[in-house]
Length: 330
Image 1 (cartoon, one colour):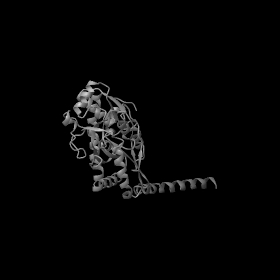
Image 2: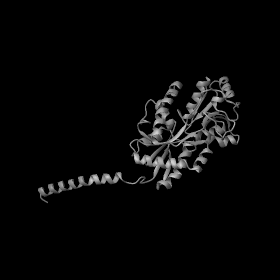
Image 3: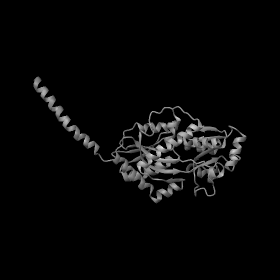
């Protein structure tokens, strides 16, 4: 091929490729969702309320989306390891985050994070509100919140309490109690309910304010003792059990929610599709009944309502973390 012919060939090829590029981009954008397996990352170990919720939703979403929906537990660093993984994932709806209250607590706990919990995520749906309760090992000589507080005052620093990690809702819930009751206790962090529940049952740790779905079987079997509920209202699952506010500390209330997030930039049609399927799933009477039996109340929302809740709760928890003087390193 002579030089002039080679140049004309190169120019013709470039023009052809440029002409084809918009069509290829359009085809990619119009691909049906989902195009492959959808992964729900749970940033905690198996066994907790968020893990339960993710697995129930994944089970129902698989047939409705037409692709496998799997749960991937990535515990560690107060949920930041799994959260960072999703923040760095492609914003195409195939990698999602099963978040809880810790998601908006962590910005106040950690001086520096490799992601922004608000800016780097888009709300898909608020899904649940989870009942937490103050529970102790039967060897602890306290049957009421007032007796528990009196014991902590008599033995400063001797009573231990578990959590799913530094800065987790369990941790801050007890910090709130310590501050309100003016007592000193020792924090023992674990990597999730799957670890701290056996430790509590064995007596390795004395107490926890945790989700009742993982604690209730042991309470009913007499292996643990529930003293009070940490939320603003009672639950039919524990008839006769008061709230901490009713029993001893007026105004005490813990809000703990679960919801699904997607990486920021995920197309709106994908988020709307997921929201519609999740809301439909949660409103199924069988699903609602199954979750209620575990102390999980369904609270489905729109994506925008969930985004608004995230912002409001980030401000609320910032005040609580500041008052507790907690600062962590990631």
